[in-house]
Structure formats: structure tokens, C-alpha cells
Figure 1 (cartoon, helix red, strand yellow):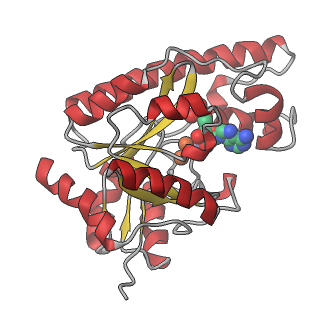
Figure 2 (cartoon, rainbow, N blue to C red; figure 1 turned 45 degrees about the horizontal axis):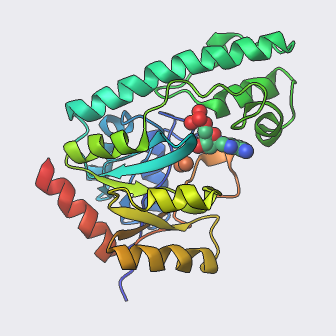
Length: 273
Ligand code: AMP
Ligand code: ZN
Ligand code: FE
Ligand code: FE
């Protein structure tokens, strides 16, 4: 049996992970992975940093990103794979999200200040895509909350009192942009979408795959999504959603795909780049 394993979902310091892209590559090799995709939120900056080291260490690096999108008022994460990082449409989408995040984060800080929890905007720094976990961390440091979960549960989670959605990009447009770049669009962690009508409607969109293996899925979750993917002839992907120390219960490589699945995606990347 082949020992090939590739983790197709993890985050670096270019978004809300705690390891740099280079540290992720080093950890992936130490964990015995043969392939990796770094899927930062709305950002592809990791590749410029990670690619030289991955090549040196013979780790196959598949381009990836996790794009935030909005479908019928619901937040939907889309994994994009196998696109050329320097593609103009992808770069423009990342820039659009960067602007959305800047405005949204300012809105969240304003609401927190109104509630007596001021945060210096300069404390929220990241290499690329600044997200709510960075704000949650700043709230812990200011002793407004004890944990990231508490910050999300009380203030920052979708629909909570200090949540600001910002100007979203629709799921349909996101898929179109990924396809225009020659990439593949995959529904991320579908079990987190609790509204069944939203799921049904998403399954009518022109996705290429579903993330069926995920660190927090059990075997029964997996089979539900595998059945759907097989019926639709979509690619069955998997990854851990590793974030480093902010989500200490998830380790890199705890969910993965085999060589067959990895090659379907990786061959597409070679073809378009
Ligand atoms: P953002 O991309 O800025 O909208 O923030 C969303 C990210 O925050 C998610 O992708 C997770 O990494 C993280 N997140 C969401 N909900 C929670 C939670 N309840 N506890 C910890 N982290 C969370
Ligand atoms: Zn995240
Ligand atoms: Fe996600
Ligand atoms: Fe993720």
C-alpha cells in the first residue's frame, strides 16, 4: 500500500494560522506527508514563501486558498485549488477581500469600543489576511475574554453583537473566478452548513469537489458527503484545517487524500501554470 498522504487544508501566518508558510512545509515533511496545500483565508501570499523550501524538501505543493463567500445570506467557505498564484482574477479577488476585511475589522473594533473594550488597531497584525481570530487574540491580551471560543461565542461569531459581515462576494461569483483562473472549486467542511435548504441549493452550483475528510468529521459524516460527491462525480477531497496553536486539538496531516486524488488536482495545476 502506498504511504502517500497529502493534507489539502491548513492555514499559515498569512491568514489566521500560527506557523509561517516555511514552518508548515517543514512540519509537513516531519509528519511524513508527501503533498500539501496551504489554504489561507482569502490570500495566496504563502506560496512565494513556501515554494522554494517545498521544492528543496521534495514536498509536492498544490496551490490553494479558502475563499469566504455568501450564499443566500449564509457564510460558505470555498476551497480553491490548482490555480496559478499570479493569475490576475485570483489576485483581484484577494485584493477585494483584503479591502472587505479592512472595513469589516474597523467596524468590529468600533462596536467593541462602544462596549467598553477598546483595542489598538496596530495590535492586529498579520502578514496577509487579518481575521476575527486575530481580534479574539487581542481581546484575550486585553483581558476582555479568557479564550478565543468565548470571544466568538459572546461577541465575534456570525450574528453576534460585535459581528460585522462586510461587503461579501457571492458563492457563484467566487466559483466563476476560480474557474476563470483554471482552478477547481471545492465546498469546504460542508457539515458546518447547518441549513439543509442552503446545502441543497449549493449542490446545484458548478463545484468540482466536496471536502469529505476533515479533522472534526466522524466516519458517518464522511460517508454522507462521499455518497453525494460520487453521485455528482465530484472530487472527494480532505484536509485537517490545521491552524497551529490557536486550534491545538487539530494536528497537521490528521485528514488527508491519497496519491490518486492528489494527482487529479496536481495535474490540473501543471496544465494551467
Ligand atoms: P474570518 O475569516 O475573519 O471571518 O474568521 C473566521 C475564522 O475564525 C474561521 O475560519 C475560523 O478559523 C475561526 N473561527 C470561527 N469560529 C470560531 C470559534 N467559535 N472559535 C474559534 N475560532 C473560530
Ligand atoms: Zn481560519
Ligand atoms: Fe473554513
Ligand atoms: Fe480553514
